[in-house]
Amino acid sequence: MAGLYYYRTDAKTDRLARTGTQGFLLFGSPNNTVLPSAGTVLTENIALYANLTYDILPNLELGAGFRLSRETKKATFEINGSTLPILGIATGSFADKRKDEDFSPSVTLTYKLSSEISAYARYAEGYKSGGYNLDFVSAASFPNGIEFDKETVKNYELGLKGSVEGGRLTFALAGFVANYSDFQINQFRDLGGGRTAIVIGNAATVKTKGIEFEMTARPARGLTLAGGIGFLKADYDNLPLDPVTIVSGKLPNAPDAQASGSIEYETAVGSSLRLSSNFTYTYAATISRASTIFGRPRWARQPGPLPFPTTA
Image (cartoon, rainbow, N blue to C red; front, side, top):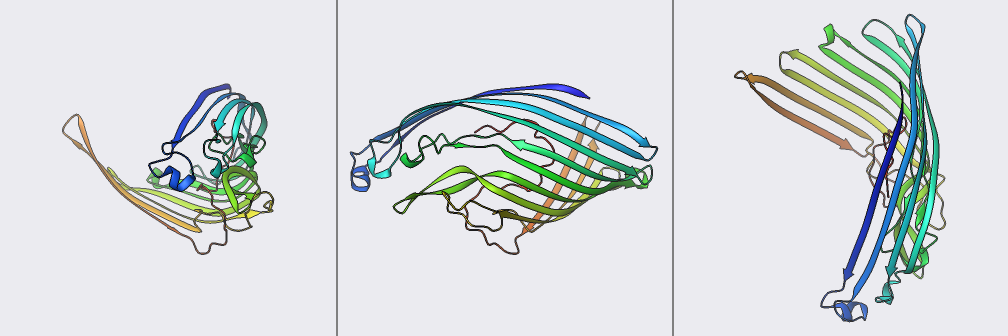
């Protein structure tokens, strides 16, 4: 299988922040003072992808693929923070263009233990494009500090999956290690003088590893039982201490353990209607937390190239 992928988006922001009736009291500026900012980001991505499988032996299959991507972003931005000088917001205009190129391969080796059960080993790479912080940025971050780089990941995975009882019971067991470089996350940037700003920046590296088990059973017609459990260790590693105030530790909102279960029942009502009911329960637990960074949540696994780029 091979194909060509094209993606385009035109994003715009136009924000007018206003002080309220206490503007003079709080900021030393007239009431209803306007702080404007406006920007655009035009993103275009074109990618060539291909996948193939080859039967090495009757029970041994090799799968290989790649994704070759090229993405450009053109950004414009204007901001006027002079109306509220006490906040230290930037004033000026900005125009820039950036390009991200990436080659993400994947290799999978699958061994069929039986006609219904297979074991596999997989290696895959992926990426997430860089972008710009087009927001109420500080004068200290403008214009050189508003851009961030792309993020890449290398994923290693071993697993066992299959079905028994003629497909009435399916299962999947996987263990994985994923190493991120230039991990994108919200960071506190030290501006000096006791001031900080929150921007999207690149952490040096992030290492994650874990194990997951999922199972689905269909014991009777219309009845489906499903459940899963996973354990995860996700930590920052080699984080830059300057210019961002972050320390090594655990990723926030990445649970050490997570479990879920569901019961679904579907039945026919008459000749043209079906009645479906579902109950789902999820549980997440964090055993320890040692990080002092404010970050955005994400699940650690990200094997293979992304289906489309993320714009910022």
